[in-house]
Image (spheres, rainbow, N blue to C red):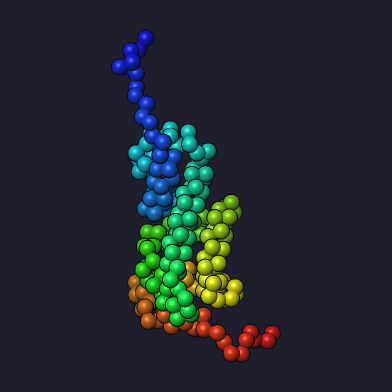
Length: 194
């Protein structure tokens, strides 16, 4: 029989589950969804491999929780970024700053976001995360513009950030500002007739 001194010490680690989810975000950022494995996550979280199967039903479940955490953080940054916006001119400046990385999200954050979008394309279960995130973004914009314009500006933000991240010659801040101003500027004529 083992004495108390010979028994392995169980480490009390109440934050282990959270640390695993956060490490999964980091692994996705570095390796993409396709390169994310249990072993890489366990190493990044500094936990035994068995901790992943103890806390999560599988890699899909773990990725979904990591994406949900990332979307929540990004949505919070987005909402905070628009806190001081009062006018359409402020909207144009805030969106321009957001696209050019002045809102606390960096290329790594966007890489995880685009991994989520691609994964949601293939896994409809992840679309609840993307839809919730998009709905939150649009609700912020709807404080300043109508719902249709909000949807368009939200899509424009995603596209312009993607162009910025992927381009070898990114769009200038001035061009971004003009594109956003055109998108949010009210028209005198109203919608075109079919």
